[in-house]
Length: 138
Ligand code: ADP
Ligand code: MG
Image (cartoon, rainbow, N blue to C red):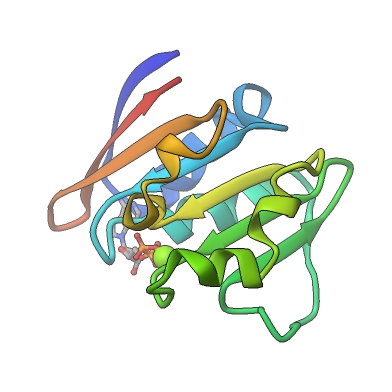
């Protein structure tokens, strides 16, 4: 998979996420892009369009959000983590064995590309205003 998709609004990014449900379900997706690029917007739209429901808050809520569905979605936001060991503390690598769709924001902070076996990378670039470019490669 090697796609370049431009969007002009959050709704279009949501539509893009929806259009990729078949491609991405069950996979590990590393989301790259600056703060405000649209990473979280993409994951929330993907979860909603997949018919998955956000699970109530847990102690690790801000680090990992679970969406329950036919295939669960695990959404990690590693922005606040600073040390690789913290990933082990929150059980990150165990959850990677789950049969779920995993989305990971800020994976590049921990060089997870070297730790994970297979993944899809989505780079979201802010082109100014509401314009975004999504580069999707497997
Ligand atoms: P991130 O998780 O990458 O930090 P968020 O998804 O939390 O980013 O926030 C993206 C922000 O940018 C939201 O306020 C959203 O409304 C806005 N936005 C504007 N245009 C777009 C677009 N084309 N795609 C996604 N988000 C957009
Ligand atoms: Mg985010």
